[in-house]
Image (cartoon, rainbow, N blue to C red; front, top):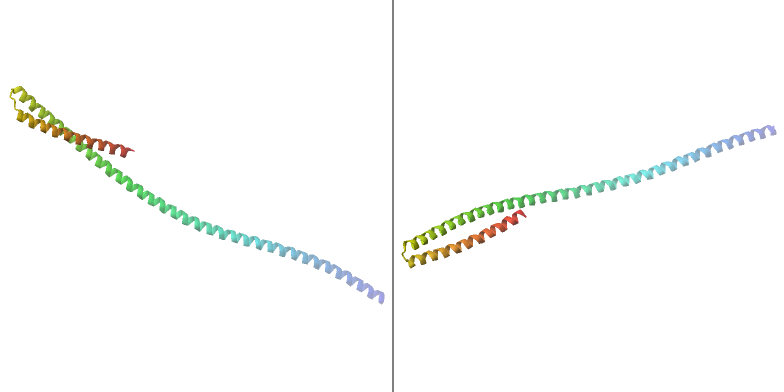
Length: 165
Protein backbone atom coordinates (compact mmCIF):
# COMPACT_ATOMS: atom_id res chain seq x y z
CA UNK A 1 0.00 0.00 0.00
CA UNK A 2 2.89 2.22 0.75
CA UNK A 3 4.39 1.48 -2.63
CA UNK A 4 1.11 2.22 -4.32
CA UNK A 5 0.79 5.47 -2.37
CA UNK A 6 4.33 6.42 -3.42
CA UNK A 7 3.46 5.71 -7.04
CA UNK A 8 0.36 7.86 -6.79
CA UNK A 9 2.37 10.65 -5.14
CA UNK A 10 5.03 10.31 -7.88
CA UNK A 11 2.34 10.38 -10.53
CA UNK A 12 0.74 13.40 -8.89
CA UNK A 13 4.18 15.13 -8.69
CA UNK A 14 4.73 14.48 -12.39
CA UNK A 15 1.29 15.79 -13.15
CA UNK A 16 1.96 18.86 -10.97
CA UNK A 17 5.31 19.40 -12.71
CA UNK A 18 3.59 19.26 -16.11
CA UNK A 19 0.87 21.63 -14.96
CA UNK A 20 3.55 23.90 -13.47
CA UNK A 21 5.45 23.81 -16.77
CA UNK A 22 2.24 24.49 -18.69
CA UNK A 23 1.35 27.32 -16.30
CA UNK A 24 4.83 28.86 -16.64
CA UNK A 25 4.57 28.67 -20.42
CA UNK A 26 1.15 30.31 -20.25
CA UNK A 27 2.48 33.04 -17.92
CA UNK A 28 5.43 33.68 -20.25
CA UNK A 29 3.03 34.00 -23.17
CA UNK A 30 0.84 36.35 -21.13
CA UNK A 31 3.91 38.42 -20.20
CA UNK A 32 4.93 38.59 -23.87
CA UNK A 33 1.42 39.60 -24.90
CA UNK A 34 1.33 42.22 -22.11
CA UNK A 35 4.68 43.59 -23.31
CA UNK A 36 3.41 43.67 -26.89
CA UNK A 37 0.26 45.49 -25.77
CA UNK A 38 2.36 48.00 -23.75
CA UNK A 39 4.61 48.63 -26.77
CA UNK A 40 1.53 49.04 -28.96
CA UNK A 41 -0.01 51.49 -26.44
CA UNK A 42 3.25 53.47 -26.32
CA UNK A 43 3.39 53.66 -30.12
CA UNK A 44 -0.27 54.66 -30.20
CA UNK A 45 0.40 57.47 -27.67
CA UNK A 46 3.38 58.55 -29.74
CA UNK A 47 1.18 58.65 -32.85
CA UNK A 48 -1.48 60.63 -30.96
CA UNK A 49 1.22 63.15 -29.99
CA UNK A 50 2.44 63.36 -33.58
CA UNK A 51 -1.12 63.83 -34.82
CA UNK A 52 -1.71 66.59 -32.29
CA UNK A 53 1.48 68.38 -33.38
CA UNK A 54 0.50 67.96 -37.04
CA UNK A 55 -2.90 69.53 -36.31
CA UNK A 56 -1.21 72.45 -34.54
CA UNK A 57 1.20 72.87 -37.48
CA UNK A 58 -1.73 72.75 -39.91
CA UNK A 59 -3.57 75.47 -37.94
CA UNK A 60 -0.42 77.64 -37.83
CA UNK A 61 0.18 77.18 -41.58
CA UNK A 62 -3.48 78.03 -42.30
CA UNK A 63 -3.10 81.30 -40.33
CA UNK A 64 0.14 82.13 -42.14
CA UNK A 65 -1.53 81.38 -45.47
CA UNK A 66 -4.46 83.65 -44.60
CA UNK A 67 -2.00 86.44 -43.73
CA UNK A 68 -0.18 85.94 -47.04
CA UNK A 69 -3.47 85.99 -48.95
CA UNK A 70 -4.38 89.25 -47.18
CA UNK A 71 -0.98 90.75 -48.07
CA UNK A 72 -1.43 89.68 -51.68
CA UNK A 73 -4.88 91.28 -51.80
CA UNK A 74 -3.43 94.52 -50.38
CA UNK A 75 -0.56 94.43 -52.88
CA UNK A 76 -3.04 93.92 -55.74
CA UNK A 77 -5.10 96.85 -54.46
CA UNK A 78 -2.00 99.07 -54.31
CA UNK A 79 -0.98 97.97 -57.79
CA UNK A 80 -4.42 98.86 -59.16
CA UNK A 81 -4.16 102.28 -57.48
CA UNK A 82 -0.71 102.88 -58.99
CA UNK A 83 -1.93 101.79 -62.44
CA UNK A 84 -4.89 104.18 -62.11
CA UNK A 85 -2.60 107.06 -61.09
CA UNK A 86 -0.27 106.24 -63.95
CA UNK A 87 -3.16 106.31 -66.44
CA UNK A 88 -4.31 109.68 -65.06
CA UNK A 89 -0.78 111.09 -65.37
CA UNK A 90 -0.54 109.75 -68.91
CA UNK A 91 -3.82 111.47 -69.76
CA UNK A 92 -2.60 114.74 -68.17
CA UNK A 93 0.62 114.44 -70.12
CA UNK A 94 -1.28 113.98 -73.38
CA UNK A 95 -3.37 117.10 -72.63
CA UNK A 96 -0.17 119.01 -71.89
CA UNK A 97 1.35 117.81 -75.18
CA UNK A 98 -1.76 119.00 -77.04
CA UNK A 99 -1.57 122.41 -75.31
CA UNK A 100 2.10 122.71 -76.22
CA UNK A 101 1.38 121.83 -79.85
CA UNK A 102 -1.49 124.34 -79.98
CA UNK A 103 0.60 127.14 -78.45
CA UNK A 104 3.47 126.30 -80.77
CA UNK A 105 1.21 126.57 -83.80
CA UNK A 106 -0.24 129.87 -82.53
CA UNK A 107 3.24 131.20 -81.85
CA UNK A 108 4.47 130.26 -85.35
CA UNK A 109 1.42 131.92 -86.91
CA UNK A 110 2.01 135.10 -84.89
CA UNK A 111 5.67 135.20 -85.90
CA UNK A 112 4.74 134.70 -89.54
CA UNK A 113 2.06 137.43 -89.35
CA UNK A 114 4.44 139.87 -87.67
CA UNK A 115 7.20 139.13 -90.13
CA UNK A 116 4.73 139.68 -92.98
CA UNK A 117 3.73 143.05 -91.51
CA UNK A 118 7.38 144.05 -91.10
CA UNK A 119 8.10 143.00 -94.68
CA UNK A 120 5.08 145.01 -95.92
CA UNK A 121 6.21 148.09 -93.97
CA UNK A 122 9.69 147.87 -95.36
CA UNK A 123 8.38 147.22 -98.89
CA UNK A 124 6.05 150.22 -98.78
CA UNK A 125 9.01 152.41 -98.05
CA UNK A 126 7.42 154.02 -95.08
CA UNK A 127 9.68 154.24 -92.15
CA UNK A 128 7.23 153.76 -89.42
CA UNK A 129 9.69 153.37 -86.61
CA UNK A 130 6.87 153.53 -84.13
CA UNK A 131 5.07 150.56 -85.71
CA UNK A 132 8.28 148.70 -86.15
CA UNK A 133 9.15 149.20 -82.49
CA UNK A 134 5.71 147.94 -81.41
CA UNK A 135 6.10 144.90 -83.64
CA UNK A 136 9.56 144.22 -82.26
CA UNK A 137 8.13 144.42 -78.72
CA UNK A 138 5.38 141.98 -79.74
CA UNK A 139 7.97 139.71 -81.34
CA UNK A 140 10.01 139.80 -78.11
CA UNK A 141 6.87 138.90 -76.12
CA UNK A 142 6.23 136.10 -78.60
CA UNK A 143 9.82 134.93 -78.17
CA UNK A 144 9.25 134.73 -74.38
CA UNK A 145 6.02 132.85 -75.03
CA UNK A 146 7.92 130.42 -77.24
CA UNK A 147 10.55 129.93 -74.49
CA UNK A 148 7.78 129.18 -71.98
CA UNK A 149 6.26 126.81 -74.51
CA UNK A 150 9.62 125.08 -75.00
CA UNK A 151 9.96 124.79 -71.22
CA UNK A 152 6.49 123.19 -71.02
CA UNK A 153 7.41 120.84 -73.86
CA UNK A 154 10.62 119.86 -72.05
CA UNK A 155 8.60 119.16 -68.90
CA UNK A 156 6.11 117.14 -70.96
CA UNK A 157 8.92 115.12 -72.54
CA UNK A 158 10.37 114.53 -69.10
CA UNK A 159 6.98 113.26 -67.85
CA UNK A 160 6.72 111.05 -70.95
CA UNK A 161 10.06 109.45 -70.12
CA UNK A 162 9.04 108.98 -66.47
CA UNK A 163 5.76 107.40 -67.50
CA UNK A 164 7.49 105.06 -69.93
CA UNK A 165 10.05 104.11 -67.27
